Picture: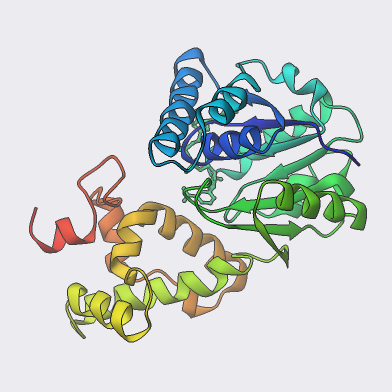
Length: 288
Ligand SMILES: NC(=O)c1ccc[n+]([C@@H]2O[C@H](COP(=O)([O-])OP(=O)(O)OC[C@H]3O[C@@H](n4cnc5c(N)ncnc54)[C@H](O)[C@@H]3O)[C@@H](O)[C@H]2O)c1
């Protein structure tokens, strides 16, 4: 199936990045938000990010202008009617996502492919909200979308081979490297990342080493670009806790059990360095 028009539901941090990447790659894009204010904020994100790319000479002004012209903003989900493929990137909440999939199933053509950028909600559960479970899959992008080279495709219990083939081509057209996982909590990357982050928090909790030394150990000892505590502050402590809880709920394996310090941090609104609240681990540990 040929993809020409891509719908993106939710234009927050991830959605706006997906809109940008699809428009730059030549797709017509319909971007949907819940109200005019968040829609304008989404468009601003795309404008600012592409302007920065021009400034850094990663993008020409002509390509930027053409990309921005390909984006249509709307608050009306019915405008997804002409989309060949939709990426849902709303808040990480299963009920809200299922409701969007129910509506998308109603408003889009029956052959359109519906995907979710979810990090932890079951793709099979989202597919079950539709009459086309064979055309539902996960398309898990990484932050920031225009920069990160990977997309994890997630095959739900009933996703068809044809859907996966189209999605592989779509991922490649976006300039991403595609990997495929079955619908298991964490897919590939978070399955390995989350227990590692939880262990790093346990080390801080137990006083095994300081956060700085844990981060230095990993950056210099393993040549990672950042250590686990810095990474937690970057991706969000609240987000990590949410994903860990979903994984624990599914696997009932103690390696996914969130350490009390992680939960306490979220209760005290230390959600991460880039999130609303009191800041991240380094702010808490410095007594800020
Ligand atoms: N932040 C990350 O690093 C990251 C990485 C990979 C995947 N994800 C996943 O991407 C999704 C979005 O995360 P985010 O960080 O961009 O969140 P975000 O809070 O920045 O954006 C979510 C946006 O969705 C909008 N929204 C909510 N309900 C909507 C609806 N019914 N229709 C249209 N828009 C709606 C909100 O107004 C908001 O702008 C989540 O499922 C998350 O798990 C996030």
